[in-house]
Image 1 (cartoon, rainbow over the protein chains, first blue to last red):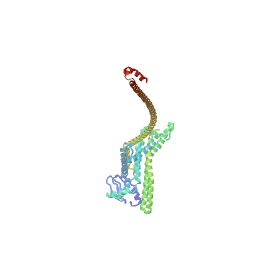
Image 2 (cartoon, each protein chain N blue to C red):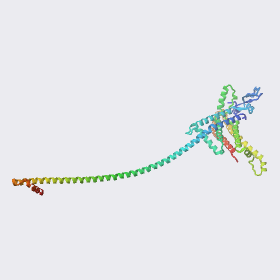
Image 3 (tube, rainbow over the protein chains, first blue to last red):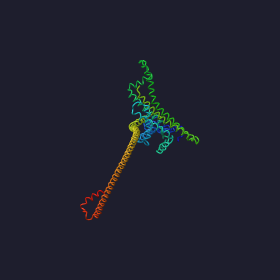
Image 4 (cartoon, rainbow over the protein chains, first blue to last red):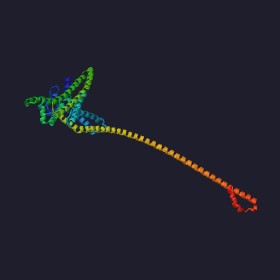
Length: 308
Length: 156
């Protein structure tokens, strides 16, 4: 357990970051004392949140990426096995389970997306299952895996204060933004592919103000453009921030509840009840957020395919 | 909470995952599901058809049964008729045979009677001749009077 509440929370909210520190950088220990000064730019694991910030863009959140890719591999393994064993006979076990998910997503896509694009359904499947799995990590009690990681870190000769481990990838804005930007890129790509570059630009400039008179219309074009571009940009940002915000807040509450465990018997018991209640409620949140992310992905791609 | 290369890593992982699903997961599973749906529909269809066939077969069987019942009744009736006929014929034959036997017996009896009469007549004539010869003794030539005696015997 970290020394105080602030330290505990901070520790839980810091990613394990691997990146480049510039030459002449002064590395500090947890008391703010200079431990070493780097003579040249070095790729290393950040020893503190401040170091992670100072690494700038050229750094990886190792924990987020590892959990995210690890979960993706688990899902790919399950899906791949089900697909390989797919029979037209009576489905059993995992195949049954995967087929239920695929059936559900197939229905949702067919109801919402009216264009013809073979990427949309697999994309929705990926988004839904992956986001769900990443969110699901939130239900593992916040201290279990970080503590195990810290123990093995110390066993390997590391400093316990530097053993950062954030196991819920969707509480990392990089992860959610990565998904949202990918969806955004697909929106733009298919928007231009379906409507042509002219149609795409027309959509950005001729709405929402549309008048018959060409002179007046020309005056409106900049206004329309500003509004539409804003609306377009808002889509991936809201997509990324909605998921991130929900999961971050959820995890924050888990951490705060976990703090109560160390404050005595009565509060600890109360915290247990709270933990349970919040986890139950969170089952709804994680499923809902995964569903919303998938739904909006389908809807946005559907809009990109609609020709006015 | 810094935006860094993780973003790019996630985009690449996402692309790989989507490509994987698009290539190896979605098509085989949806195909299998569609095929199964078709199979089930076919099965239901076949069941319907079989039910209809069964009904038809039952109808046909009923018809055949009725037909064969009628035929059986016909055959029985015919057989009865034939039996009656045979009985009648047999009765007729028996009657005829009886009559024939009776006639034959009658004829035999008559023959017997005649034969007995003949025998008697001859014996009487012999007796008469014997009696006459005894009466006439030597005076009567038996051979001359034989004709006369035969006449007498015949008249008896």
